[in-house]
Image (cartoon, rainbow, N blue to C red; front, side, top):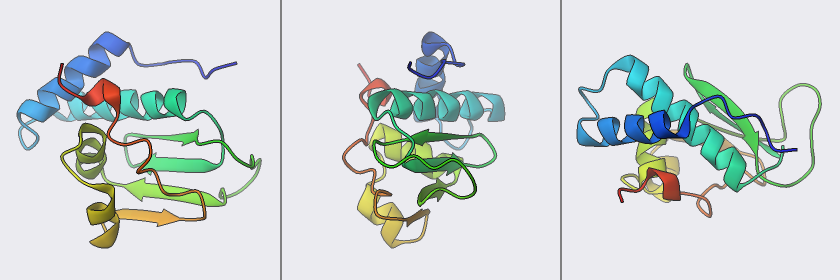
Length: 125
């Protein structure tokens, strides 16, 4: 069964557009909605439990097919800040650049998300 969506897709896409128009001036609640929506989109695109993607303080999700963990820290973890995450999902930031300069901490054998980013739902229509 797919995970239950908590963010309305219309509101999530709208939040991404607001962020994309003014990343530095975007209200905090809009950033949070955009992050949560995009995490849920990634979980829909790459269902699984092999990687935990953390974007503190706004959200976290488990995604990517592979071995499921049940306790403690998963074998693969990706963590970044909200601005970097939204840059990645919209295509403004390249995965290799963000990992290379330390904006993304990716550990574990499945912690490479470049095959899933940017998200189609985050692209301007």
